Amino acid sequence: MKYSITAGFLLVLFFSILSYAADPQQDVEPMSGMHMRQGMGMMNNMSEEQKNEHMRSMQEHMLKMHEFSNQILIEKDLAKKETLKKQQLELIKTHHAQIILNHNQSQLK
Image (cartoon, one colour):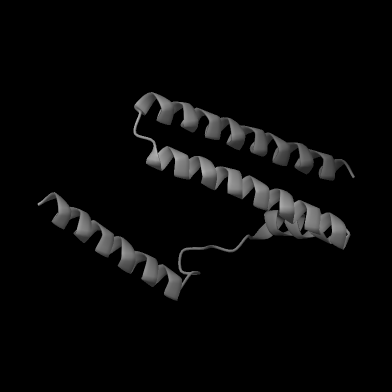
């Protein structure tokens, strides 16, 4: 019984992924208005080297986030899982604070 429920869940998950892969833009709304202009303006003011550095920084952040997510998902000990979640939350807060700081600095220019 347990395996049939798991198999059913995996089947539904598989088809959900396939339908998303077929049309990845279905739930994604494009950036609009002020946010798009600010984001595009900030990137336009960067050299190619700065853009590359910025993208690598974003990539590094995403990899850290995914690593935490993977560790959280496989961790069986609830206390360790909670510790990992807190560490991931701190990473999110730090990243958000950096975004706000960068945004405020770009507004002053």
